[in-house]
Length: 387
Image (cartoon, rainbow, N blue to C red; front, side, top):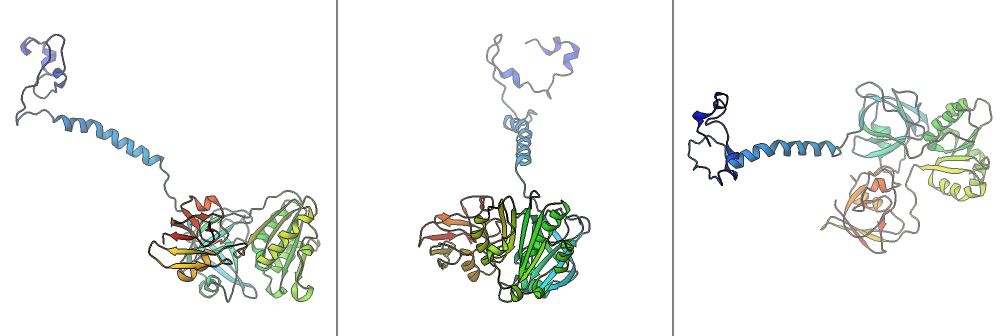
């Protein structure tokens, strides 16, 4: 290589001790292999490893950021609500109105939707929206006080007052109304809450509709004035009460369910079961229903539930759910729908084979169990939960 003194002046400025000449250590066809001179403590050239890391680190950081952008991030879709009104609607029934705690519009909803409410005690309970979907500022629910229930309804009746704040989730809809042909709506008591917005939507759409509203007495039926206003003397609404008309049969409730009619029904479990059994004989188009309590366990088998690898073992009888037994041992256990579609009661499984029931979306993976509806795969089997 020619000495530096023989180089043109324009190249002298870029040569010198601060210029890396690592490429000159490569094999040269003209001069043969070159060996770099020994390094000294004053050698300003960078350490090869550090130089490599300086080149690679930006790329690694870019890749990491790219992966994070692709990974789904948990989104808090909960709402902060404030109670704006508590109003008696019938015997042991109050309605509650909510607004957004920070002001502004609330998420929209469609008839049949519900809210999951986190009560001050930590309980999570589910209530149908029964207000006006066109009102973006207000949600309305109605709650019947059940004296011998699990405490959720009593807590609402006894502790929630205007100004109280709580967290909610939703709205969600597992009982959607689809406007179309003729509709028969059947409401049993507090079951009128999801039905009322459906009837309003049907009336607004000009659908041929009928409503049968039944309960123990007129004093126990909420929103009777609103139901009467919807009827407007048209004869589309039939109100039946046990104290004056006797307990209705499923066939009587389904009398207007002719071919092509869609039936929407919400009420107590015994009435739902009776309507389901009688429905096929009507030739109606479809039956849609929602329960306000857990479905009865049918053809169940006993099994065991262990709480943790070294925890207590609970016996689950053939006629009870794992949730009902678990909640007695652990009252803080979270649940909502008790029908296998909301996922609130989902718990991880450490051992045992589960006969899964309910929604796969609510379960998410086979390593989880919806304790409200799922059981052990074998009679007498044991499921160990990670709790």
